[in-house]
Length: 125
Image 1: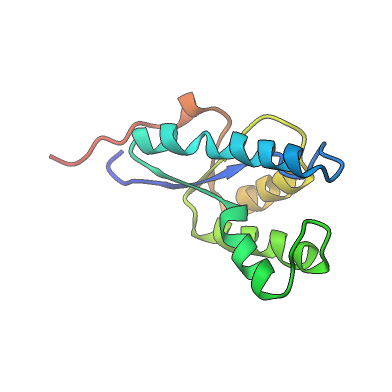
Image 2: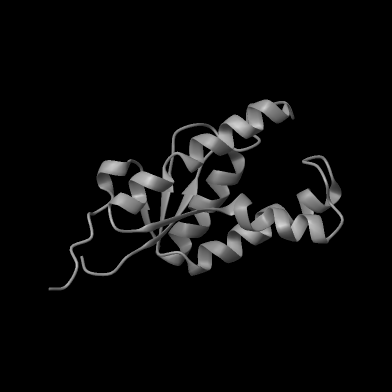
């Protein structure tokens, strides 16, 4: 492989948190913890919420319970998915991640279920 991949990290965000902000932050950190190992393999990782929150805030949303969060979170992630080469589905139940997996399969995206499945980039010499 000689081309760096843009890999969407998909996993639990709100799932299993009952709206608890600390639990949501922990889920986000879990996804973010994959960013460096993916980079070290020669790729770039992205989490949908990194791009969704600026849109949500600009639309007037300020919390996970806001109507703007509900309106924009998934559409932003799905547009982002169109730009990604692959998805890393991390463990844990998640309605949103399951929706992303369905869309990724429809789009023919590569889906990885562990870091070990992600190829190491070998640059052209």
